[in-house]
Every structure is written in structure tokens, then in C-alpha cells.
Length: 166
Image (cartoon, rainbow, N blue to C red; front, side, top):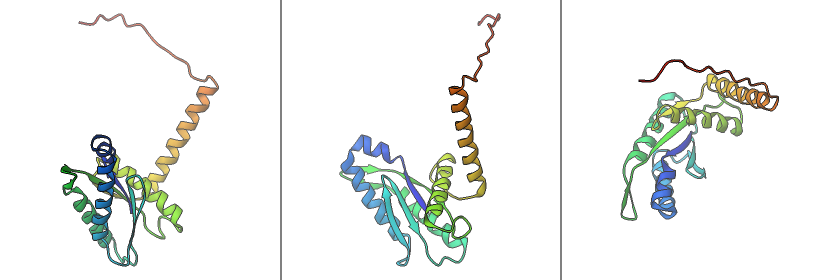
């Protein structure tokens, strides 16, 4: 699971880095309470965490953990006489279906997390191959636009409207 705290930047920017740091510590504690002793929780940096669940036999167990994490992180935090509200966007990838090594699993769960954010945040998404295809198509389009700009391949067309505005 790749977890990103929604609206963390706003907390850091408005309440200060001390409150942001305290929020990260408290968030880590809440995430840790949602997993078993055999599972792993780590902060990657910024407001991103990963959770590695081991020996999970079915999707229901994964769903339950993701829902618990979202529920725990959506509860108010009392930090430095301030009440802070956040949520979490979670992306999930599965071994071996979504990757055979940690790099591909993290990349794919990160992509699923961004889909969670695009869905309105405070939700979780499983990685799908269509996410990879969409990302690759977007990168190809960016590359094509860049090349077209460099090669002066854009042509501007415009027309003057004869309609008057009311």
C-alpha cells in the first residue's frame, strides 16, 4: 500500500512544520495500529507511507486494512492546541500480479494512489494494467507535444467573430 496524506501541505503551510512533524508522527502511530505485528509500516518521505502486508490470503483482508487506515486518519488530530483534519489516498499493488520486485510494486501502487487522488481523495484504488497504459499514453503525448514545439509543427488558426456580444 502506498499512502499519501491528503492536504498535508496545507497543514504544514498554515500551522507550521512543527505541527506538520507532529502530524506525521501521529499518523504513523495510527497506521501502525491498523496492521498486524508481522506487517511493515515505513515513511518514505514527505507525507508518504508504505505498508507491506504479508501472508494475506484474500482481498477482503486488504480492503479491511485500507478502510481502517482511512478511518483512523480521518479522525481529528489534536496537535499544539489545534484540531487538524486530514484524510488519506491509498494505492494498492499485489505481488506477484502487479510486480515481481519492490520497485515495480511501489511504482504501481504509487500510480494507483494518484488514481485515488483523482477520484476525490480519501479512498483507495487497486493498481490495474489500464492505469499503466494511461500513464504511458500521457507520457507519449507529452513527448509528442514537446517535439512538435521544438520542430515548429504547430499552426495557429483563428477567426474573427462577427457576432456582437450582448
